[in-house]
Amino acid sequence: MLRKVDFPKSGGFALILAAALGACAPDTPPPAAAVTASTSPVTRTIDIDGAQIRVREEGPADAPAIVLLHGFTMSLESWDGWAERLTDDYRVIRYDLLGHGMTGPDPLTRYAPDERVEVLGRLLDALGIERATLGGNSFGGLVAWRFAAAHPERVERLILVDSGAYSIYGVTENPVPVPDAMRGYLLAAPLAGVQASATQIYADPSRLPEGRIEQIQQMMARPGNGEAFVGHLEEFVLPDPEADLARVAAPTLILWGEEDRVIPLDHARRIEAAIPDARLITYPGVGHAPQEEIPGQTAADVRAFLEGRDQ
Image 1 (cartoon, helix red, strand yellow):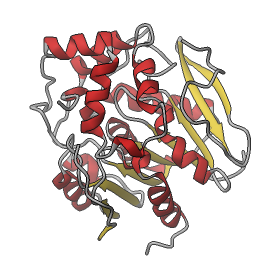
Image 2 (spheres, rainbow, N blue to C red):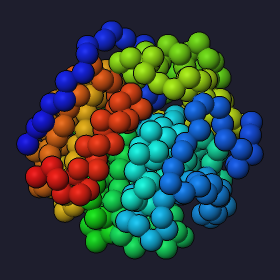
Image 3 (spheres, one colour):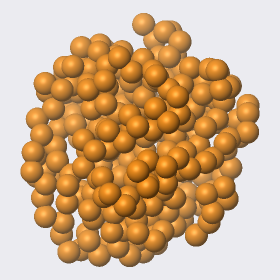
Image 4 (cartoon, rainbow, N blue to C red):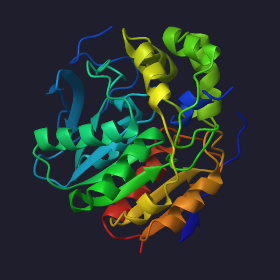
């Protein structure tokens, strides 16, 4: 089932593989608009075998849990708009993936997709969460649906936002060499490069909160993150996903920007067809991260899905 939501069309070098899949203390909010919610956010670190994972929790502690996973080179701030709109009724949990944001590099270099699935399970255990709704954008979506396929008993519902799944940029069951230019970009994270990449990730960067692009650059440039990004790409694989997608038992909502320059819109339809209980909403004039470009509309669609009003 596909529903299209109309938005004005707008114009916009992708991060190649990087964007494809996608100096402050942990309790100091980075630049950009602050999150407001019904309860004060709690930001802490959770140790997983020496990795200090930054986790932010908002909303009632006894409410249904929603765990959100950001895309490659991003951080938990990618979900600010949804957190602001969902924490009245849900326990919203988001975290910086290993090698990203303020979590920083993993001492055990667990950057392969399957290792990230395992770390997600360990994090849920540490948070005392037996079962939750999972949501993920881009590479975060790939981790989310792979977790749902491997651990169906732990996933109530699944939300995929311009999610990785099928082969792109020549990546298959084998990784591709990281180009020297990409390696240099990830290690240096120059602001001009991040600004150029933003025009490919977002159909209309002017929709973003003031300071958001600078925030992304500052997170990317934190010590050790660049080396972790390169390590991620050196282990990044996209084997045929059909059999695993078919094992996803949770009701699934797929959200996709029609102007996505990173992952083709056709992949959204293929994912919808492969997951037994899935529905797709697409947004004209929106790029690779709809949760950031149009947080209000996407959060409303998520709430309808969670409340069963989209049937």
